[in-house]
Image 1 (cartoon, rainbow, N blue to C red):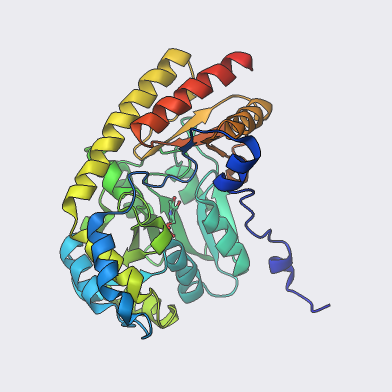
Image 2: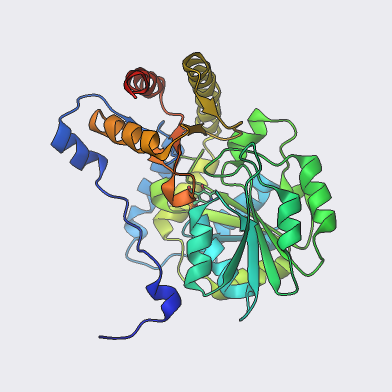
Length: 366
Ligand SMILES: Cc1ncc(COP(=O)(O)O)c(C=O)c1O
């Protein structure tokens, strides 16, 4: 047998279990609510569909390795220069590239428990030590505890804002104070995967790009509000010197020409984005009011999902499994270290209503 380094051997390959189609075949439900991945259930923006159609015949050629048109459009969208943008196959790829490009042997990263699992996995796959602060009592990041973990070997601090899976947010004031205390040689990654939602939900939500801080890499994605999770497109915004490093370690021909076109098309479809935000505002109000009536605790969210605290692991598993058989797909948060919690995304109105109906029934039985 070929030997594998121990830090890779210790990893567990991602195994999401059965697909929605497989569950449907097994249990025969006729209605469903797919609310387990914080996707945009409104679908794909028409602007992206039209743009993809126009480039289909280019698929026999490699894409523009510089993604120039897309980066130009993104630079305008964000309000920065083109050399401050890096694009890749999803923001998760950029996260991996940050570890690849910036973290040397023996250096560590600091972040929180109960955050985006891919951070822990990618750090481990690069054999990087991860130092984790506990979440605070409200399921938010404890920035002081994170500061306390920083040592001479710390290279990167990862902040997820709003945080997946809790939905909790760090305010502008908190982030500014934190940046003042972080040592100058440390790279701060601010993952804003849910930026488009958060800025509508909370007026004190910080746009970390506006800090113009040479230590910050801001991550954003087309997988959430832009409705392109399957296209795999994410981007980073940072000082040109940091972007240069990311450009050095990126895959040569990523993202694909279809994906680059989809991103451009989505950016031009402002109507889709507005509809998406409205859907989330209305759906979130409905979900919160229904959960309040049921007396279920949820963390204060600035995203398109809610984390429900069901008090025990047993209850969280049972409810998740029962719902699945009825066509309601929510995420049990064991992999995030929150095994007594589940996460539910806001979907279409009929999906939200179906979730609440089935959830109420199963809650009454457990
Ligand atoms: C906080 C956070 N960052 C990044 C991602 C991954 O985004 P992408 O699809 O761009 O790789 C997700 C997806 O769930 C996320 O929740």
